[in-house]
Image (tube, rainbow, N blue to C red):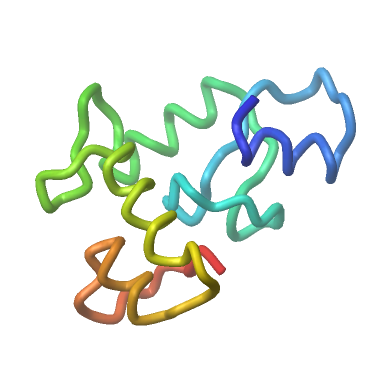
Length: 104
């Protein structure tokens, strides 16, 4: 079970009205369950949102040539010893301010 799916389970319990966790913040590592981050959704609604945001398709990179798995490992290494906003920004490739909610 993925971390964001587990977060939804903790927040909503077992629920058949949704099948996926939709990342409204477009941050695949996010586990914050609220209307601006991860919400319970259906596969159809999630795919529509992904297409509308331009993040649909197989084998996507993160914009800097890394896969999402490589980016996840970089983030894990950056915050292994505690929260460091500079190390986190470097790990996610964030070089300028964006109006997207942060992971933490």
